[in-house]
Image (cartoon, rainbow, N blue to C red; front, top):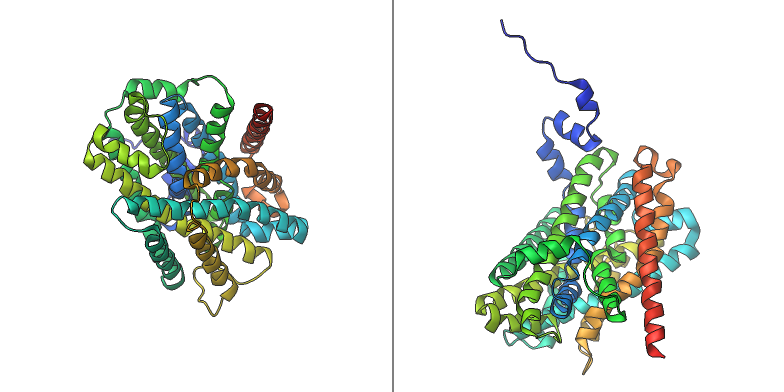
Length: 434
């Protein structure tokens, strides 16, 4: 008689909590699907119009040199997003409400004010991206802005939570596929791209620092930190969902930076390699791909810009509405109606409508708005991360979900590094202006 081999319990104990949960669960896939959303959507939405413009400019100006920043940003994004997700899972509260509870109304207003400043530039950038993408097909920017604003407000106010999440995920996946195809059609030097992803390249100048800060700012955003926490709370996820949430966050961080790498590679292989280092918008990058990589590559790149802009337009104003209503204790959430949460939907409509009108200002330098909004995100990000990290180790607040020492140390390291980059950028601009 053959004896059944017993599992090695010591080896099982050495596995990470997420791995043990996956092996123990009889329905791990269903458990993962139940918590799916915050990390992936936040990651997909990071590659919005401003992000695509930033990656396009980086690829055109520096070629493959800044791919290492994309990889470093992926690791940093995974760390900061897990810390934010833990806050939402443990407390069931969004970013604004938790700041008000822990530090008072004044500090909450400061934190939300900082985030709203960054969000305004991001939302305007989304409309600029939609207008630029549809302009390729002959659609006036006034018409595209009006249609996009009405469509987003209708979706967020009329559809239920699960349908909205499905739309966000579908758009994010479609955008990812579009830029993967664009990168392949550009026929890049994959060996060079891989080597530059691991080892830093290029000389440090003020323009180089500006590009680094823009790349970091479009990957790890103030709104992204607030969004993942508020969305997890709005989805009614709890401590038991931590293992699935960690998988969700990890997948989101990986995919968002994989797509970012595809965009940089596509522009490096076509624009930079042919000496075309100056572009006005991401739409110009799409047009430039036509004669270099084919008309299909141009259309796919433009389609990716459109879908990414729509996804960003759905998430960034949503985060702003979450944060303000949470900070003042007003009703909020996508599972509530206009009557139940008038302030939430009113603010959502205001942020969308204001940005739609702002982008119509004559002679507005859209490329400056889209690119510098990401740099602005990077400059303001340390203020948000400090609040997040201060709360992440509070045992009374998070209980068993408080950050472990390695995660806590890594979070502060990322916060400190971004702060140093911010200071270095400001100093370089001041010195350069003299």
